[in-house]
Length: 144
Image (cartoon, rainbow, N blue to C red; front, side, top):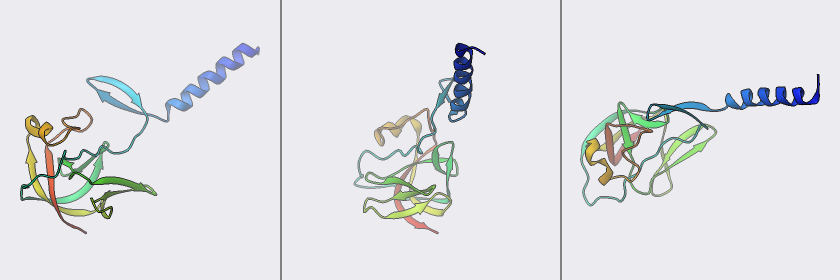
């Protein structure tokens, strides 16, 4: 086997191996290969003077890169962040304290926001990556 053929075969094998390290996602009905990334974490532009006081109860889940409770995509308060340690995804509050993890049963104050108004509350939304319905997180009441 000549050198050019060996190099070509190595190139084909490498592209197959590298291709297995990405996930396929949909963007505007076009399939695109992108590296697996951190969860989408939309935040409110600022902390509002008043907040909605409905209650959302359920398990915090990561579904297709989106943090949700039930069907609701969570829009976190300004100053909150995300941390991943040893594969565990945690929510960090504005005092740099971990307050919940994916898989926890939680209770969140706040309220649902229609898609047509969400851009007023978060610069990251609406997004093709994670669709609504959207829950504007007000008060974190508990995590079990």
